[in-house]
Amino acid sequence: MTLDLDPHRIEAGRTYPNIGIYSFGRGTFGKEAIDAAETSASTLYRIRAGQIIYSRLFAFEGAYASVPTEHDGAFVSNEFPTFTVDTARADPAFIGWLFRWSETWRSLRAGAVGMGDRRQRVHPDRVLRYRFDLPQLAEQRQIVARLNAAAAAITARAEHAIKVEAEIAATLAAAFGRITTDAPLRPMGDVAPLVRRPVKIDPDASYLEVGVRSFGRGTFHKPPLPGIEVGSKKLFSVEPDDLLFNIVFAWEGAVAVAQCEDMGRVGSHRFLTCVPEPSTATATFLRFWFLSADGLLALGRASPGGAGRNRTLGVKALEAIEVPVPSLDAQQWFDNLQAKASAARNAQGGTATELAALLPAMMNEAFGGGE
Image (cartoon, rainbow, N blue to C red):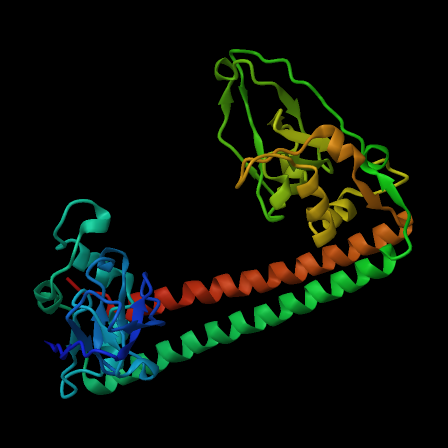
């Protein structure tokens, strides 16, 4: 391919369609048009469909792309060199896939200039010097067809997963609404009181901490904490089925139910462990409510503090939150529905992971040998 720049002087009163390039070989995206009255540039460069384009600034992390039809005729700055492929020797779509392959831009990154990751720029000459094994045109087109089919399957799976997730969420919300509409409200302190299990610190021991992710994404495990480093911090043991709150981020959904794999782990004073009364409520039912719009609103009100993320859930405020308490049978029925929904989500996620791993493997097979 050859460096092919199409410069255009900025004309007063005009606007110019503009694009950006995603990192990691994920293609181009439309940006707000450039207004001649607002840009400091004197020249912009027009791009054409099928050209190879990259961002000098983000080349180090794979900001390369083939210009799609919908961005034909857009304009970019001089930070986005463009190349035209010699169609007598190479299929532009094949070259486009080559630049989506991580090994291509990692090799090009090795020749970048500048200091620091985000100041390294790849010069167009470096791109043109890059060498790789070029199959015959017929084989190139076969490779493109296979990669396009795999990419289409991944896109279809992603769209299907979004649809399924929406259906699951709607089903759970409707079911939850049915069993809670006329349910009595009771204070959390009565339904699931705070339970503390203090841990005596041994300076020679180490302690496995548990954390709670925001946005309802469950628990995670922290590295072992040496007892000698605990200092004045208090630790409390966690048991399966505890309802856990990270008091700093509870207002943004840092609520989880401790799992079997969390057994034996500890939480600091920043974590509140509530244990539902067995005859009154279940932890998974309460978790669902706290992650609903009403529950998050209640946690927000119970978490005073400054702007941004500097907010803390108060113990008394949590105990005073009134939660809906339908019959235990109704809660257990809903928990069973949640379990089925979780299984469906896991199945979707497993398939998506397998498909996502397929494309890099196919590119490795197709392009292996670049230098």
